[in-house]
Length: 274
Image 1 (cartoon, one colour):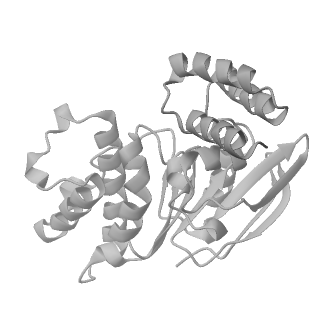
Image 2 (spheres, one colour):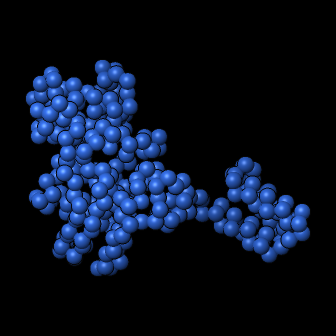
Image 3 (cartoon, one colour):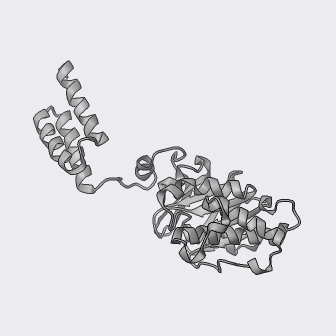
């Protein structure tokens, strides 16, 4: 079961929205704070026709939801899901009291999704292959960048027939999501637009930050100084450019890729005289 369309009418900032979703196990909504990302998940969850399996929002559920009710044969699927989502070798090595916020977050997610699948598909040979719709608000919360890079793959491989609909502000999440599955929400007053974002899949974090989130990935003063370097070069003020490159090198290091690029342009100009 996957949602193929989302229709929202007169719900918070959404007056009349209809979105066709691709046939994908992962859908992501992105946009500025306050644009309606969480409201979109709330609207999907509150529509009973969507039959949402699980909604993971700001309020953390009981980590061990329904675990005492599980048989030994079912408990093994919980252990399997936890191992796959956390990326640990042995479930027995986990000590709940010593888990980090990141581990607790992923453990909570793995346990609750698995228990809900077991309640519906407990008679299946592998209940983890049951279908469903899971909503996750800010999927990257608590996660180290390394885990942000792999969480999408771990969720969709552990629960291959579940459709995950998430919100995110992380370029490390978006680089692992197909372009057709990323929807950008933009709101201006009472007007709300939702459309497929520019290319994100496989892009580096800096490109995604600039093209989708509309922010520079650098310190503002450093970014302005780098722009000034290139203006000096374009205007033929090579010595001024060299002085600024030298100044920047003391701040960000001489091996910064933009400084290397600027020096290469200066060297090329000195060779060909242009």
